[in-house]
Image (cartoon, rainbow, N blue to C red):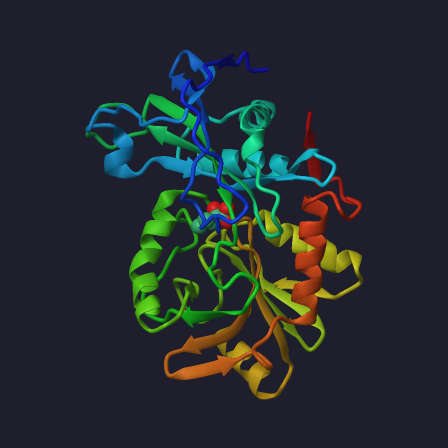
Length: 356
Ligand code: COI
């Protein structure tokens, strides 16, 4: 149990009004959580302080070798004023899996969740309530030893910042166009692809720029070895509905185990829809589109929730998913997940945690 100390801001910012579009990740609340780590001492001095710049040595290891982890989850305010988190235990577990992979000390799950609850409670007035909005929570850890040799750091900072957000993609629930990348790769098995660390996102930038220049909003990554099997979108996992079956790439070490991915699989199974976690090749996808069995394509992620995909391009081939609109199942999943997150649909799975 953390003994958190509080330093309240003396200069509160204006909370965005109802008309603010809350473009993703652009506005930050009044406070942040911060806690230090030192080898031999462990995690210490958990505190909530005004949101502020950090002072770090230019030699801090995170700047040179990228030893950092991050997470993403959301808080929602229900119509009757309760505050709900969606599956924070899954984020706590994944955070520690990332920590283990990149040699960052673990944080006890209860402490990780307590810190989130405390900072969200402090800035609860910032949780937006307009449909499609939420308070995005970004926990992260950086390596801070002032040292240029390559080894795990002995000091770290764990921080949590909060950002009121609307849709991740400007398209909202309208289908996005996705570029299947056949040249660059995001991750390979044995690397850090299944960890939530900046390196994966940095590796994705070049292809993302290329895709944007061609009018595509995201990149769909193929496996790094055969460049044949579909992996993930980088900011989302990917699902296909083929001939009545929901298919998603099986976690193989280079795919991020998404919390929304896991929730979608559970929901579909609960509804009696067949779900397969397996290898899916680009050839299979284009074949299914050709023979009319590709019914829906959608991405899943905390930031994006559910994002229908209307259009995919691989080399010179362009595939249009059905009529290019949002699929029936994608819509049902979106409505159910956001309904549970907002406390409007009964949470049969025990996924929400109320902050009291
Ligand atoms: C999230 O969905 O929370 C993520 O961390 C993806 C990020 C690229 C916004």
